[in-house]
Amino acid sequence: MEAKEDDPASKCDSTPLPDPLPTSEAVFLPPKHSSQVYRSLPNGHIRLLRIHPDPSIFNTIKCSIFEYPILRAQRTGLYEALSYAWGSPPLGETPPSVLVDGCKFIVGENLHAALLSLRDPWIDRIFWIDAICINQSDEDEKGHQVEYMARIYARARAVVVWLGFATERSGRAMRTIQSLAMLQDNEEKREKYRNMAMAMMSRRSAPSENDDGWNIGELLQRPWFKRIWVVQEVAAARHIVIKCGRDEVSGQAFCAGIEIVMQTWPQIYQDWEAPFVRTLIEPTIRLMKDADRKPRHAEDVSSRFSLNIGPLRHLIDMYRHREATDRRDKIYALLGMCSDDPGAAGLLPDYSIAWPVLIQQLARSILKLAHPVVIDAWDNRDSVMIKGRSYVLGEIAPNHVAWNLKRMSLCWSVGAKQCGWHKLNPAFLEFNDLLEGDVLLMLDGARMPLIARHQNNYWTVVRIAADMEPPEKGSVPPGSQLMDIILIWDWGPVAGSPAPELPGKLGVEQFMLKLANFNGQLKRPLNLSTDGVCFPIGKRVR
Image (cartoon, rainbow, N blue to C red; front, side, top):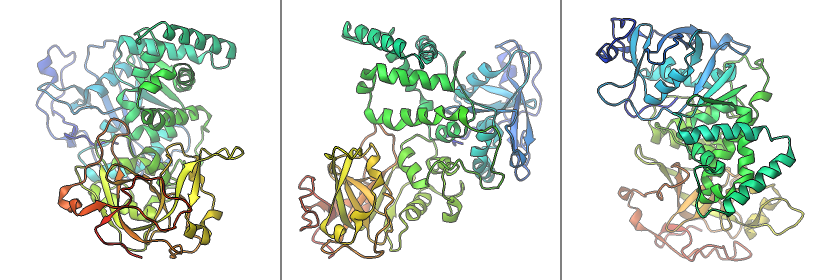
């Protein structure tokens, strides 16, 4: 659940509004404290929202909340869960509101539009919606409820994805996706569509609003696709419905249509930032595709519930560039998906812990540090600075071996080979975010290496953990030089963000770029600029 910049805690008026509501003055009454809506939740319970029916879209949305024992539920529940982008905080003298148990409750514009679209004319609908079902002004409750979120979405009979308000182009895009999904099993028709699309593009010098690829491309750039929480929400879902305004398509059809678009309209991905597609769109589509194949009965009845998608370190590498209003959610949103136990590392959701403390705790847990390493983070920055001693194990290079299907290979240092590192399987070479010249580094005192990339005047962390433990723990490969290094671990947006800023107060100006002469650590020179590794002047540890 994302926290807002301007806390939108529910605000309730003690006097219910009249029905019908004749004037805007009746709708926006002076808000009072949210305790009139919320009461303390029993352990293992959540709140669900009942949206009452109304045939008129102009009438105020009326809802009521009730408690539900989520830990006792072993089957799919008779409720739906909403996945949406919170958007900007409610602003102005008359922000959008709904009635919850007769009290006015301030909501964001995007949620208000979603509720209007979801409200049925004749029957109640039951939803779990984080902004209303969690008391956002209670930090303790937020922490406990976030622990249940993977379970909440996994138990829901459907997850409704709300992409936002409809436009003329979004309507075309949704209809095109639905139509293309019907071509999924017909190769002849898919080929005919591809030929038609390519012929259309060859006759134009600029995209047209009638081009399917551009309409869909615009839809895929909506804020929902950039959120960190959607990863867990669609990964847990057993059935997905995509809504944009009044347009609606099943998650399965959406994925099938998008895959055809990605095969047919490659130019929209050339014009976009490539990392945007690779890091945001493709992983989301992969997770959504599996929704309808999941069992309808729950198998895990323990208090520790996880989707078991992968180790936390892998999830961090894959999803840390997604957006969250509260940076702590970039970690908390992934805990319900990880296969390891975050509680063992003290990483359970706790909104009383500051971001710098949380990220330091995470880094030490992932790297399994035995020696002190300086990890600096700041509340107002997306960059984390890691300062310590390190040595080089090898360099990423293009793979030229025909029988090896991996895109990249690893050129080991001489010392690493003498220690037996080359006998380990570098599974990370299958990842498509590696570039020639990336370096496999081991921080002194760590039990797992990381992959770093040399930028203009600093090194960045590409992957915080390379899943290879030393053959001989605690030993530096023969002939290796142990050097002080600064690494920037960037948690900012994946595309279009400025380079990480190094805070001046750290005295970074005292560090300089110096020639990386590793004196035989590698059989061939590192493929780096002559700037090399960043370390203090004249200080090199052997």
